[in-house]
Image 1 (cartoon, rainbow, N blue to C red):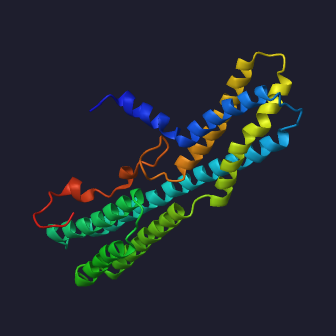
Image 2 (spheres, helix red, strand yellow):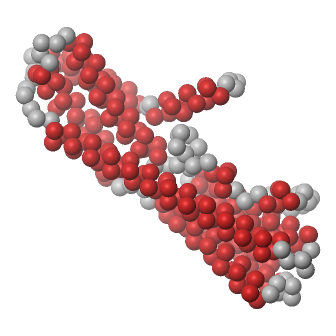
Amino acid sequence: MNTDPNHGMLQKYIAILDHKTGTVLLLCPAITYACYTFSLSYNLNITLFSVAVIFPLVFTIREAFRKRDSVIKLLSRFKASLNATYYCFANNNKLSEDAKREVAEHLNCVSRIFLDALQGSDFDQQAVRDKLNDVFEFVNDHRSVISTGVALKIIRFLKDVDESMENTVGLKLHGTPISLRAYCLVFIYVFPFIFIPTLINDLNTSAPVLVYALAMIHGFILISLYNVQDAMEDPFDQVGLDDIKLEEFHFEKNAQLFQKSPGTSA
């Protein structure tokens, strides 16, 4: 097993290389060879075609970054609301340590279920709601030691927890337009057929190796940008360099303040 941190970083850098990269890198020299073989070249202004590829790529990458920033804000609100909920109980001297530990465990379960779901494909809303309901029931069961004002604060904080989770799940399920990303990929595959004959016409006095190199470089840049955007569509899978560090948003007050008692749920 390789424990070199540089090895792990290298793996993340090459994560954007996939079968689509290989397809484009094979397509570009193949088209170049065909153009030289059949003396195919033409003088065509490719500005319009460049815009047709670059503009949607830039748009989708920008939207993916905006989505990522929005998710970070929602997760920050999620953790802050869990912390605030817990402190409403922790600062109540009338509650026993066992009661505070029970609340912390409920909140920990909410956090763990939700963050684990973000890394997977399924979000069990009912499981999270059941844990939030456990906190509501706990408040009702201890109304003799929890004032009405504090109970209302707890309800508001739990509402913020639920709202931030629903918004985050919505952003996870609904990313940038699928049709636009499909359009980008189609044009990236079509672009070499338009760009390479024009490149040969413009560099007809240059060595063919230069045309081959430029064709592959352009193709590699375009498909790499597409793959970067595609990787950012799921910032929760902990694979890409720009993925959200989900563990930073995990509620851990119970682990810091209490020892886990036997028989409590994780």
